[in-house]
Amino acid sequence: MKKNIVFIAKSLDGFIAGKDGELDWLNSIPNPEHNDMGFNNLMDEIDAVVMGRKTFEVVSGFEGEWPYSKHVFVLSNSLKNIPNTLSEKVSLLKGTPQQVLSRIHNKGYYKLYIDGGSTIQNFLAEDLIDEMRITTLPILLGGGFSLFGDLDQPLDFDHIKSKVFLGQLVQDWYKRRR
Amino acid sequence: MKKNIVFIAKSLDGFIAGKDGELDWLNSIPNPEHNDMGFNNLMDEIDAVVMGRKTFEVVSGFEGEWPYSKHVFVLSNSLKNIPNTLSEKVSLLKGTPQQVLSRIHNKGYYKLYIDGGSTIQNFLAEDLIDEMRITTLPILLGGGFSLFGDLDQPLDFDHIKSKVFLGQLVQDWYKRRR
Image (tube, rainbow over all chains, first blue to last red; front, side, top):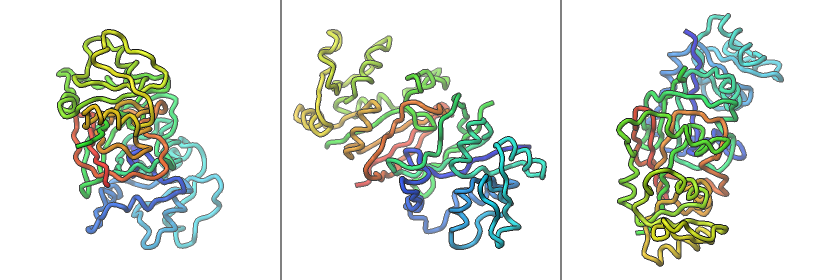
């Protein structure tokens, strides 16, 4: 079954990065036992990851192991190649959300983790998101890069469940009401 | 003890009214038993309500009983008088958030319910909000009047609790970390 899932953290005021791209606030809540808040469960559940170029550049700059156990499709009209170390794990794709989805489905990947602010906004604008798992941190950033963007039409979701992590983060699961 | 509490509903993308001021989506989730989601408990807890002119105009246009059991202070630089029917329940105040708070405290009102988008944003910009109880509806409006505005500095809160109402609305309580 085809399914596009968003899994992302945001501030209380809806930002996924600060005014200057800051991401440090994402680690501001002590997490001594390295609770992954459902990330590895998501990895087990999906067939592939779809992300934008900016997110790819941030993630490939992280120290430590490559975090994705499934194939990653990076959407970019400008990127020409992938670093050699990642060439078996990552592919480049360009086109509209529908075009890239169609190509990914044709390769046999159906359950997709959609990541990155612009990519999520572009997919939502085409009503292509089926589920969202959004973790909210208890901070007002007061500006930055917004998770959600403008839509021509409102989109209704159903609330599935909420879970509190580390006593501070609220993760809400939503499913598109169709 | 002085305390300023926000109690408000927002869309999943952080709007308190739609692009054309729409509020109908606030009643889009069936509520056959008229669950007030904590509104009357809040009324019992506070000494007075503080709201902006726009919110006052919306609320005083509602059919049915006046919803506030405590005195309401309306912040406005333009409004000259209050309708006769509300003159004992509502007072007008003008000035900066600090000035109006000082005048309200001097009248013996300490625990305040701060309501209305602009008023909440102005109070947050001066770091004058102590608690927020925010109810999120499972809808992406895609545009409208935002609950939160720009801040010079991020503001940290502590998550207190989360509660799901009507199987669809998530109410999160936050307390300013000082």
